[in-house]
Amino acid sequence: MSFLNNLFHRHQQPAVASSAFADWPGQSGTQYHYEVHPLDTGFQQAVPANYIYARQAEDGTWLPVYIAQTRALNQRLEGHIGVADASAQGATHIHVHLSTSGQAARCSEEHDLIERWHPVCNQEPGN
Image (cartoon, rainbow, N blue to C red; front, top):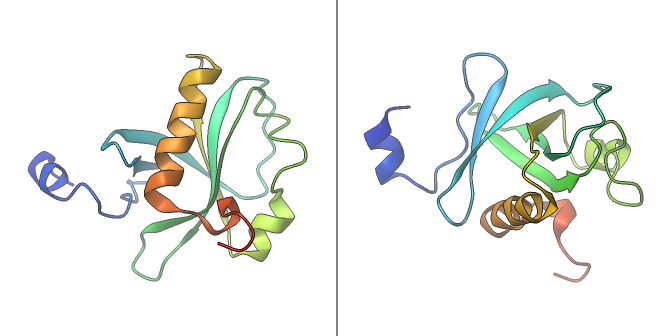
């Protein structure tokens, strides 16, 4: 996707990159660069990260099912949406953005993306 196309189409779907990356735009216009992995990938790194359970639309664009952050990627978030729940909502992949900038930065990215995408598993019951 060209720079000019990206500049004038801020609210488009994240691009499916050449092999294992996708860029997700937040409500603020910030682009977040994520690695794409199969949903059943086991992560060994105990590093902080943001992650997105996602599915691919028929046109090849990614759609988020759940967006979250974690202080340890190998544990993800206990007590929140798990792989089985995400899979039941159509997720086929997990997108990961490693983040060592601190919890405030991870939470800001998480909220920016949720505000833009409104994933089904991030919605409050009754909304």
